[in-house]
Length: 117
Image (tube, rainbow, N blue to C red; front, side, top):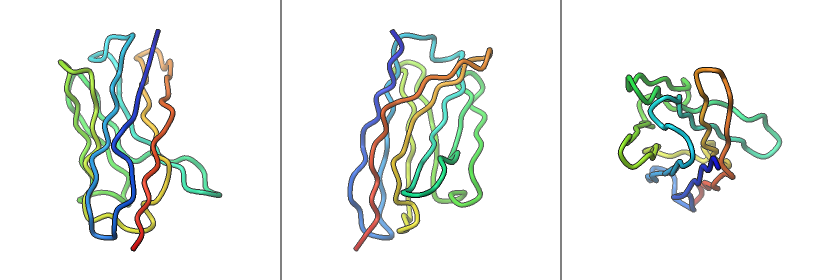
């Protein structure tokens, strides 16, 4: 059974940092592209960052470049999103997604990130 479980969200002040984790189970982690998406209230879900697990190639949305870093651990089957210099506009529910080479997709349940003073 495929499972993606996110953790690490919370309330942080502007300029602060958080690290999100997504623990994966039930599939061969190294054969998937792992991504973080986010959805703010009233807005569409958007891609934040992605990483190809076998090559380590990464991709970022322009809005988070230089502030967020995605990384993966193929031993722990976990993908991380290190978020620095957080802004109020980063407030959203953050979702982890796994995409196979055949474009089969799995989603986590999401974790809330709130950036506010």
